[in-house]
Amino acid sequence: MGARLSTQNRKRVAAKLNGIKKKEGSETNTNASCATLSTIKTNTSQQSFDSLHGRKYHNEQTSTYWFPNDDEEIDRLVGQHFALKTLFNGNIPEEAIANAPLEEGAKVLDLGCGPGTWIMDVATEYPNSEFIGIDMSDIFPNNIRPVNVQFEVGNVLDGLSFPDNTFDIVNLRLFILAFRTEEWTKVLKEIQRVLKPGGYIISREAGMLETGTEFVRWAGRIFKERMLERDQEPYIADKMKNLLESLNFEVVHCVKKDSYLGRHDHLNREFMWDIRSIFKSGQKFLAEHLEISIENYPAFLDQLVSECEKLPEETTWSIVSTMGRKPLS
Image (cartoon, rainbow, N blue to C red; front, side, top):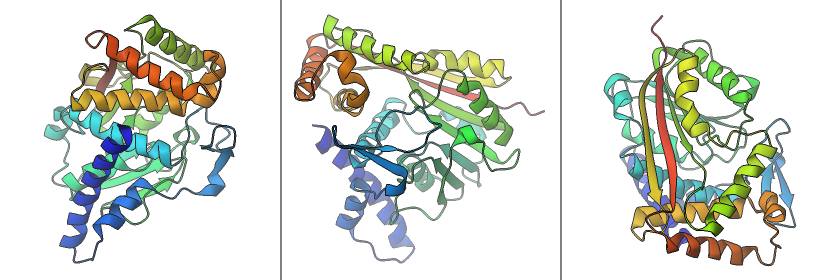
């Protein structure tokens, strides 16, 4: 299910970007473009290979992020992007679209941009704006990118290289597994520094898996316990509003939406695939605590899906979209 859906998503991005390249007069091969999105080449010097689980991970010693950065994870992130875009009716909240100079020419920073799906999608919508994506792993697309997008390797925890008051919008999405609890304030202060007065921070963070059958709640509890053991904040989605307000941001948008993991419509199946893929990506850190062997882990993933389907109206996964505006003075 997941491979089929995410392949469709890659084709959407590739088709959109191919259209831009054709307008610029360059030749583009559609099949090659789709292949590039599905197999973005990573910088192997920034990876370590786990032969036991067959996945590749970053080598950034200061980071607590515990998911892979290989092609399989890129595929998950692409599918997740389009699911979130559909859930919230767009990539950017209406309040920012109405007030930020995106049509005229805004400057936008995407932190933790990964394979660049969000930033490339938004950049095609607003060709007059300038977009910069930053990630600690070089998994950026090499052959497909709008002319108004550039990528840089960097870690926000080390500070950003940009001057004060540079950006109209900073996107910070799904860092729940990337920061320790005490690091959130440091990161938000750095974002506040590089935002222009009146600029916006856009945050979208996921909640925990805490509804559904006993099996689903057990799996969600183990996931949360692993986060707490790594000094991470499992409820950052619900705490973001107060955290932004404590730093004198004006919260102009805060919306919480649920996906229903047992429903069989296209959107909720996309989120169900994402949950399954999240537990698959976390196998290295979860299997021992779930007391599931490597051999039995695929069966656990299948059971997780079937258990979610047992209570389709009760098994939910929430995402919170929060946007703060930096004071004008």
